[in-house]
Image 1 (tube, rainbow, N blue to C red):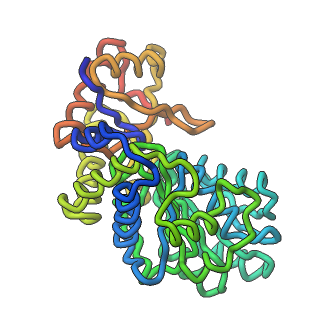
Image 2 (image 1 turned 180 degrees about the horizontal axis):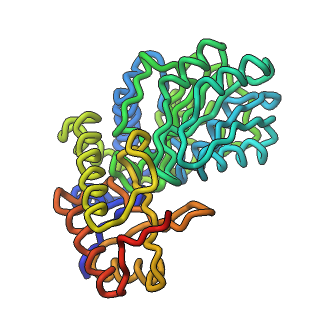
Image 3 (image 1 turned 135 degrees about the vertical axis):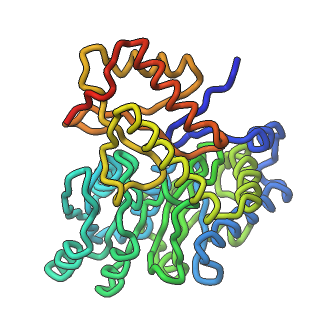
Amino acid sequence: MTTPILLTPGPLTTSDRTREAMLRDWGSWDSDFNAITGRIRKQILAIVHGEGTHECVPMQGSGTFSVEAAIGTMVPRDGHVLVPVNGAYCQRIARICRTMGRRLSTLNYPEDRIMQPADIDAALEQDKTITHVAVVHCETGTGVLNPLEAIAAVVARHGRGLIVDAMSSFGAIDIDARKIRFDAVVAASGKCLEGVPGMGFVIARREALAATEGNSQSLALDLHDQWQYMEKTTQWRFTPPTHVVAALDQALQQYMEEGGLAARGARYARNCQMLIDGMAALGVRSYLERSVQAPIIVTFHAPDDPHYDFKTFYQKVKARGYILYPGKLTEVETFRVGCIGHFGDAGIPGAVKVIAEVFTEMGVQAAACAA
């Protein structure tokens, strides 16, 4: 059976080398495995130029586990979090805050608009009880790229903490700890680093992390406890996802061989441009303005044609070797196509060709897109 190409924002298509790294079993307390963990922590810190000032704390589970760990550990129990919301993953952060009993305020935007630093500035000026701002860098629900550097400057000027969900941007879009002040940046193994899912990590400013002991209501998601244990023993507190860690180690080697963030980001940007141009030639319009589009995943208007049905469309494209993603908007019918993963230069043109074939087979007039 031919392995399909995943045009999704993670899990994504990985290389043979990354998959082969999972064929060996590791002892979770073994010194060789602990060396892998230590190497990963250093390499991830280097991506954001955080050596000497920040700590990388890996966590078991999906990326959301690490987002929750960051909120629960970095924000005191009597803290107050401001969450600008322009998509589903911002809404998830807000839900985490409510679930964990952290006081919450939101700034709400349409899903095709970026967060406005001036609004955050005004909110922080008006409400001095806000202790932290939590933002999503690339909102994967639509693919919009929020202005992190400008937001961080506002938050720093007010002396508040900043927590960044960089799940879909880390490793492809620059986040420089020397220029951007943040308490925590959160990402995961199965995204732009092109590892497999099952492990997240939090890059925390050491000074901020050191002051968080006792904040977390959760034992498993206590970043401070995880950090302290790793510092003392080089081991994970609880059973680590050993195969996932080994795969990420191999994926990071390939990341560096490719040329690091600049090369990875450039490859994804080429994919994104080819995708938008190719779909436009079919008459399919992208949902976002190009100025706010991140090169990670693109949301497209579904054809406004009675022959179009997403489930049928999805299955027919899948049968030809490509896995797409459903839309995540409530008011507009869309579908999404990812630009990230290890699938070579032929991946995007091949997907566009297949989509054109499926539209023809279904009798869909792609040019008739929803307004």
